[in-house]
Image (cartoon, rainbow, N blue to C red; front, side):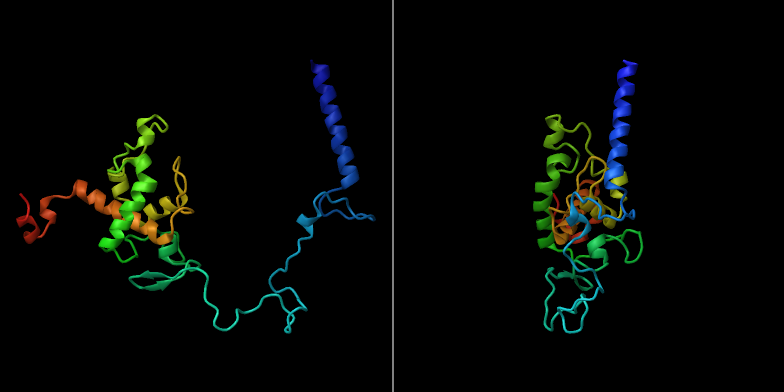
Length: 218
């Protein structure tokens, strides 16, 4: 058995040496051109930023957009103005601009329509695991696909900032997959807003209501 293993090792070493001898190392100098298995990986038909380019009159690759060009991304309307998807903004990242700190509160304009949208998205993307009540008893747990799912009413999650919840929805965490590729930015913030309303419905008391609202209770 040992002889067989030694023979395999020697054959592998010989093949490796032969391969290096024929193909050479990446970036090494030789008199003859190297043999390229995938030349398109080394010689890509593209222009790098600031490279000379004689196609344009000014001779550079990087061109300013034509006058009147409209950004392809959809503008997001927030309480503080308009934001585009490419901007380093709390709306897009869930973090304070230029830092790694999560924003405390939802930067979007929270209203009834947004909460309704958040409920719809929550029931589609979150409820299968976390349950429609957010208590961690979704269908995936009931049928045994996932043994443990976070209860969104736990103190740990309630104390998270809105920005961190947005970041978790966007990029995923632990066994939770990223939902960012599936949900637009506005919808992710809508889910955060609805989750806060759902948590309040569990933890709130009648003392949180105005006197007029308390008067309507039976």
